[in-house]
Image 1 (cartoon, one colour):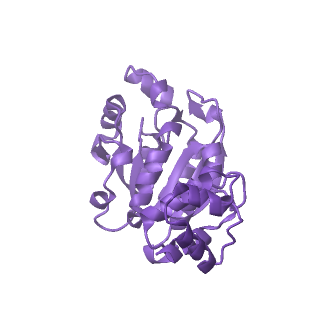
Image 2: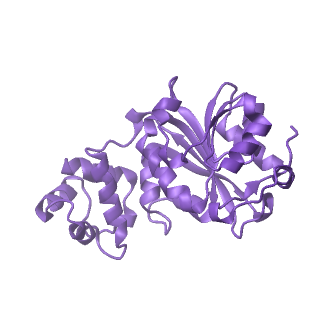
Image 3: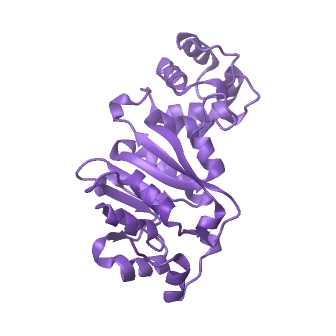
Length: 274
């Protein structure tokens, strides 16, 4: 398909990429096609695109027959989207970290896609996890180091809070890496595309209290050198006696470190506390 290159669109509308917003526009057609195929494998898919920018991924999603809700809070970018794709998308000028996915998915779970700036990755991810039953799949273009954390396995250096929380809800994989030269302007880091296939709510590792589960995991990784017993006791989430009993009930050695626990073990500990 034919869609103007990033530099050409910026020139057409008299704009520049905003460094303070982390704007680096992906212009590589082959990579854009791969991302669109991951987000919308079949026609008729409803895709919420976060940070639609100049519309390069948007146009490819439309070409695949997707119904696109383009989310963009930058008024300049919204002007471009209106000028190029106005009658083909639903444009929502909003903060991607504050979306109500229930309102955007009346017919069932939706796919989510986007090129996420580093400083917005965490708030967007946590907002997504809070509404996981509304999400079918998520395809994100991220800094490679962030992508590696999300897709890490227990015991690896990158395994941490985001890994556990996302992998409790979804099967996560890195689908491709993206060099700086694929963007305009080129960033100083390599990027990667992460695919998260969300499971039905009943298939997620059951926990007793989701908010406490998140606090437990956060505390377990807060001081990686400490044993699980000491790290969780320091967080004072529950009394020490109750914690010791729960660890025993879940079959978890209190002398282990939090970074060695699997998602299933973290969930079992929360249930034991319940």
